[in-house]
Each structure stands twice: as structure tokens, then as C-alpha cells.
Image (cartoon, rainbow, N blue to C red):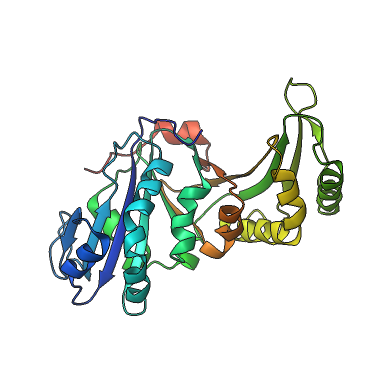
Length: 306
């Protein structure tokens, strides 16, 4: 599912920032040349100066490839440099720019646990930079700014977002697999408001258990994911027992809206840790909202900045 091609472009760029950054040392550690480097004071295409030295490595995949593919490529490329990057974080900054272009008012995409490991292994915040291209467009400045340019994860989460929600879903293709584990997980889910196992689809015996994170919808995504991480931690043995069967497929589904044509949603590495350990993917759905409704916004879209 996460290998789907999409005509809307995505960007994944590893960025190493710092003062007097030794570009050659970064290149040796990574074992490959950068996609681009800039020195502090260099002028961007926008006319603004670069604030810090920056070494960038962009996944050389078609922009139509899924973001998941770009992140998995970056993880494999950066793994030889992990020791160097962890040491550099004590005096500089390392971040992964994830840019998603959305030609319309909504987008759905999936990130595998393998892609999420990049953020967990380097203890980096997952920053999803969303640009609705009916109203604005990407430029290099976006790829060089973000958290390293002064925006904190906390500030990014205060966007004028209508709501955020997330749920942990378990799908079983057959009868409830290990009956004891299924019953224990259902009991735990019911305690937090779930309706329990319910029939799913047309396949005989297929069932689903949906556990909605009981977090205020005005909270950022990270609060929802931290609750899910806590639930998984408390019931990890039961979940592992269920996952040991070929019929059980867990996934985290999250959806959120924004009223801005450029927005950033953040999830800390701590909230992603158990998802990567248990090989649980995440499905994201984002929608642009407006005070007068999406149709009104689309009818009055501004000029795309080039």
C-alpha cells in the first residue's frame, strides 16, 4: 500500500546544519556526496541569506514515488553515518525535511514502520510539511527552513487546525486467532471506549477492533500518538501474541485538518518507538478546511508563487 505512485510530488531531504560545518567529513561519514551544500551567508533563490552551513542529501527518486519510498532510501543511505550524526547533534542540528505537495483539498498516504525507523533511530521529530499547491508552492527555502530555521515542534503544533484524531486498528482475516489474546485485547479496548470486535468486510470471519485515542481533538498529532504508544506499551504481550498469527494486521490511522495552505504536523520519535518495534504502519489523511467550506476556498484560490 505504501508503494503507491502519486502524481503529486513529495520531497525527503536530510539536512545537517551547523557553524563551520566540515562538508567533507559529512560526505566521508555518509559514503556519498551531498545533493547540495550551502555556506552561511549564501543567498537563496528567494534573496534571503542562509543562516547556517547546511549539507543536504535528497532521495534521488521520482517525485511521484511515495514519501515512504523516499524515507526508506534516506534511512539506508544515512545508516553508515549514524554515529557521526549522533555526535554532531551535540553541537549542530540534524533534521529530515518531509514535504508533501497536495493538488486539491485532501491527501492520504501511508508510512511503513521501516520508514519511521529513520526518526526513531536518530531521535528526530517527524515533521510533515504540507503545501496545498492550489494556493502556494514549494521552493528551496522551505527545504532549508522549518525546525532548524527557528520553528520549534511546539510552535508547529499550534497551527490553526480544526481537529486531529488517531486510532489503533486491528484487522483479523479469520476467526479471532488466539482466543485468549483477542479477548484480553477487546477487554482493554472496551475500557477506553471501544465497541469491541466487529465484523469487517465481506470475508467470513473477518473482524476489526478499533481503539480511538481519547485525546482532545484540538491537540496536535503527537498527543494522540503518545496515547497510542502508552496503550501498546501496557498491552504489548497481548498484541505480540495476536501479531504472531498471519491473520492479524494492526495499523494506526490518523486524520487531521488545517485551515492553512502551508502547515506542519509533528510527531516525536518517542511516540513512534513501539510502532517501529512492532512493525505497525501509519495511515495519514489530511484535509484543507476553510471558514466558508472547501468549495469556496477552491473557487478563490490565490496565485501560485513561483
